[in-house]
Image 1 (tube, one colour):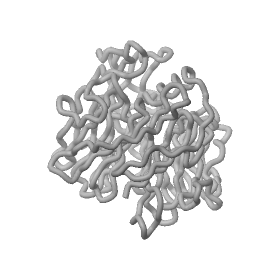
Image 2 (image 1 turned 45 degrees about the horizontal axis):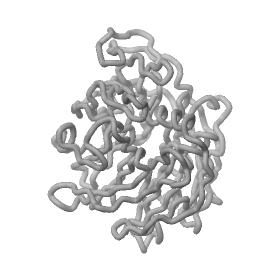
Image 3 (image 1 turned 90 degrees about the vertical axis):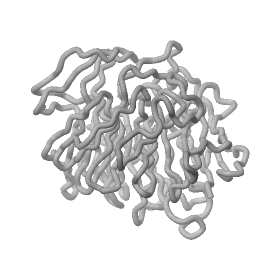
Length: 425
């Protein structure tokens, strides 16, 4: 299970509910006007937000909620923001997937989308909410090679071969007609990790309105707790994130790494693991990497500390990581959870969401080295006890003033579940 889900479940238990009001935080001289509660979701800890740079979809934000489980289609041209009158999203999950917790969403085109839950892959039409197919992800696969296993402290405890049932789906993404789903393969006793199996990525093919098991069926990663998927600019491979194994801090508020994180470059069409890169004890976060427009550099937050990792995609080497991270709130592990990093328009900057600080930060990428800007946008609700949480987030595509006016960066808050709207130009 992704640590965000664990953190979400913990907060749902520990944080009292509070009604969400509409308010505007102090304007930022660099990031522009900020409106909290630009859209009230009505569900705590929404799982995902997607704004797709594709014809017919650029004016919509698709928001994945957990309680109730649904996908909301929000019209970004509405003032104030409102549900789309054209796109239905997915108001409710099909009965056979009702036990699943929504994790993330991949919009294929105007009439095809993939919703990943903790038990299923739901293939549906976001225009009219028609469900084409629900794929059960709880069944076994046949392994072609053994997978290594570890205890909670990262010590090898053997391997598994033959029939194996992947567990804890973490991310879904598509390259052309090939669909990939990552599995963390973690085993928990309550909230405590007890063991882990090497991560895998399962593959499916889109054939019209059907999903079929692809060949190869899966690829094994080179690490534990396989989470994020990032389509590389060449369109032929995924950057697959292995977040590594972690333990809770003494106060049960954060995670500390037990094993090194890493990334693999995996070809989803033949299943080959093309390259591996260790990221050290950084707990790389679970979402897609923010890739510069030229495809040369990528940035990702830490799921344990208040910092970013930067890698060179051409040379596949770490530019900033363990020992020299890009500090946002803290360079130490066990201090924060950087939920998501969003690439700014034209690659001039980064927008960074700190879950624990319930705040938005920004980096300038126009210099020799990335530099943290002085602006901090607080998205917390002072009258709401506990952590509000900031992230995930998405940037609206297009040219400001030509394709749209108003805010262009949309950030989800956790408790209360709302959308904050920020103008970045």
